[in-house]
Image 1 (tube, rainbow, N blue to C red):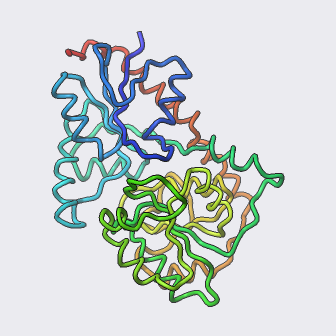
Image 2: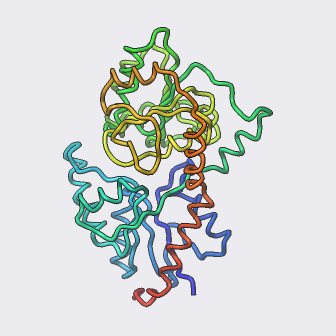
Image 3: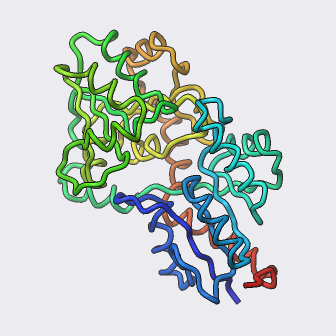
Amino acid sequence: MRPVISFITPSPYHKIYQNTLLVDELRKRDWDIQHNETTEKTNYLLCTSPSQADRTTEISQKYNIPYITWVPDIGDGSEGIWEHLNFIKYAAHIRAAYKVWSICTKMQWEIIRLTGRYDVDLVRPCIDNHTISSVFSRFETPLFPKKNQMIVVGALHHWKQPHIPFLTWKEAYNPKPKLIYLTYGHLDKPLDGHYNKNTMGVNSLYARQLMKEARGLDVEFRAVSDEEKYKIIAESKILICSDSFGTFNLPPIEAYFCHTHVLVSDTHEWIDLPFRHFKTNNILDLGNKLSSPFSDDKNWLSYLKKKMQEYTIESCADRLEEQFNNLNGNLEMKKR
């Protein structure tokens, strides 16, 4: 008998593996997957995000359902008092989990170091390769024509260091390309193709300062649909991921599928993926790397292409099926 898994997820408007991509794929494969709900049939909870840790723990304790936690990232709590308090709670949540999964090799060992929890399995996530393929299918040519622009993708939280690309762009380029921030943040209004400055400014520490310093410059802050996001990534010459800690975001992988070059901070110099990198927080080094031509070495591209196939929805669902099948002998743990 297959276990019944309830995915406890965020509810963003965009498609991410943490939300419904994998839920939909596993349901196609006849798995009884619940989404942000539990019933008498529920055998396990799957916490897919740090933002859902408290809710997962509460449900687990209320109904005595064991939970698996899938850790995408964890800092050491040194980024500020709010992060420190959340780190303590998240670490306790990880230690109490029935099983712990990591999204990449580096985070696998960071979880052990930061929480003392061992027996951490590597379960890589996915990107929305279906929507990317759909966007590209609308055009006659296999590649988008590149515009003179560079992009940063993600919420403007301070640990993501969004000011580093801006300061580099401001100092290193002449003439300058357009700099575009594609951000999700915390949006509470219908999307109109523009950045919601009020909600984002409240929820992300560096947003207001960046918008102030970028005033009058060729810098855009935009919230877009998934389709528009991939189109803009595909049209751009390079994507920059400058996060100061953690494992990796998915935008660099999305950029590969969109045939766009990537530079990531060496904090993210992963074992898993051989992307080009620059020294974290080093504006001079980032400027030098941006100014250097990217050579499309065929052997490197061939290797990267093979690695990237591990991040499709289908490949990730294969990994989840294997993990879930291994739970079959433990259904008696459910005591709801």
